[in-house]
Length: 348
Image (cartoon, rainbow, N blue to C red; front, top):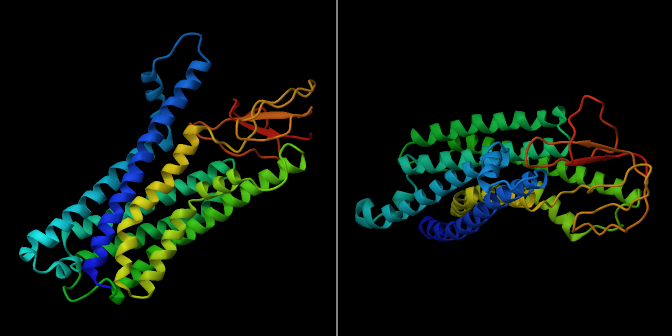
């Protein structure tokens, strides 16, 4: 498998993935603004223009990260297109595309690699933020992945330095480059696997509690599996493993996951944002008071049986257009923030 054929295929497939990412980006931004607009109007006696909702969404971490992903991934895709023109038209009159693609010192290659590492950093930071949210802002949960994110940043800087000072005869598999690339792969992979396990376990824990109280039917729904897949960024984790395998085999195929990685990370993130915008939250809706045997008002996708229940309810709030999962192990004290977003369930 030649370097030229892999890079041509990578550019084409990256373009298709970029199209998916761009569609999800626009959809997620519109959904976040629309959801914010609905929330504002539901608590106001007068109609609120959508411009006000847009200004409110600016404070959301997800919205800011969406714009940052859109800018970085669009730039990465544009550089890939430009490199194709350079390889087949402008560099040496288009006579040496293989030499062009293997030149790690080229400014466009260094810039493209920097954008790749930046998207890995953004993706890992967002994953840790999501994990922190899902675990009700428990700081100790986020400490281990923050260490590996620091390792990713350090290794990424090392990779860029080696690329920019590389000898023309060295390839991407040179030992001095390999050591730094291994650091990048190990750091981001540990972060992703840790986040995947912690988020999946938390969702499993919450749903197990709901089933034990009879508020959710037994068995694992397709939506629950999908929720774990989206929240834990399983897609980007699998893609990182794919790159690690291709690079370890010293195959030219490693250029393919490298080229498409920013788009894959962007799609994984945008799935989270679309989920939040649609309001697909693993939480209960508004429930009856402890003294009133009202049936729960449930989210549209939650097929809980309508039954009389007695719950002690404490509400907690996330300060963004985003939500955590209910903590069934404890109640919040009088000093906690309150609102309608998340419900802690006591004894039924």
